[in-house]
Length: 117
Image 1 (cartoon, one colour):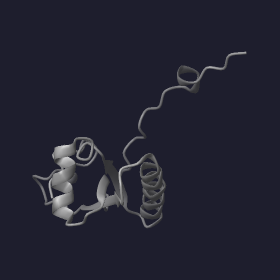
Image 2 (image 1 turned 45 degrees about the vertical axis):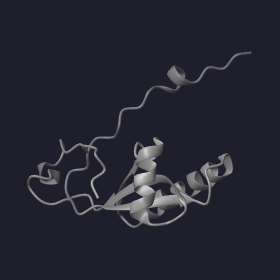
Image 3 (image 1 turned 120 degrees about the vertical axis):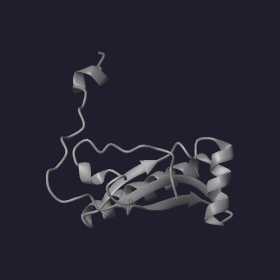
């Protein structure tokens, strides 16, 4: 299932879909409803899935743009074939061996956190 999103391949040319088919799989996390409690439960489940995948040596990428709009969320729900509400898709695969891509740049703590007395 295409997720209508381009993933970076700058670090490894072998990741390019032109050189080989993408072997990633899509996992859909869904909840019984669409309440705040459901969103929190899904967040906890997402955290657990990402950690377990990391422990198993798998690469992951949460994909939420498909569940942010009602129409695309309904399409995902139809594809899954469940009455549950899709909350997040997770792209799961095996990263190519070799050079590790550089870490994502982070802002300095002082740029995002301010203490007032």
